[in-house]
Image (cartoon, rainbow, N blue to C red; front, side, top):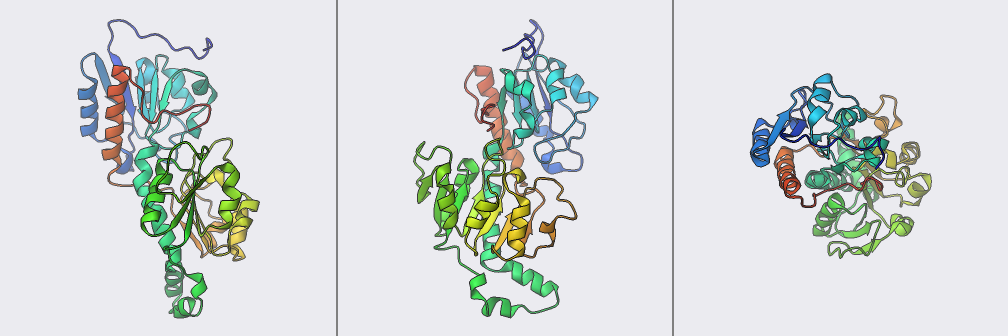
Length: 357
């Protein structure tokens, strides 16, 4: 560890400090409840201070781009910081920081050089988003399989789109017997695979290390070198992998061209993984059945994006993980990890800062 990345030692006789900045006035879904702050104080116990900073954060995507003065002042003596990601300015202000926990799943925005080079532990919340995102994926599959897009647009246009269904049954499908290719098979990917398998689908898992552990809910497991072959047999492709230097642009024009004409692409990970220009062009010429997108290279999605005008695109505003049970799951992860930190045990969801996930 270099002098630039060394952290100041704890000061004897002073309380250890946990600072929480998870407050969004406009978005109750992302505002830490007072009851959870009280539970953190109780779990921290004697010798600790727990401070929740109640100034609003931009709690979307991977976290805020800047921090207000109140946060910078609060973290000055912090050993632990809980937030939606961490900014370089917060990291620099927190000279005694030893552990960062992010309430977001994505970590790319937080992996700036100083954090990467330091020995500060970094954890994220990837696993707790698995349930709502897996349900989002199944809902999106059904949207296209049963022609909900055809019905919604046809009726809104003032018609009665029976012909879209009865005269073109090839535009529809059934989940049962179809193939779902799940790219990225961590907590979210496995949750998708389990639900797809329960609905009678064939599941092909694409993961970095195909032989790392048994996957009973997958019919086949392939590594990155098997992606092209898996795409050619897919009815649905679910992107559930982190955005890293290796995965940026993973689904480009060639991968999109490899998909069957009735395939649907679902992206619930990060927008940078997909070539949106190539995807929009393929959708516009009818080369794909559709796409369901919760994430985009630029958010909010620009008003002029061709994706907005396409009738075979289902767009949600990076809200696939929103659920009333978020804090229930987040509380369990925070409290377990706080106990582990105090006891010197390994932390759950520890991010490999070099790999980026």
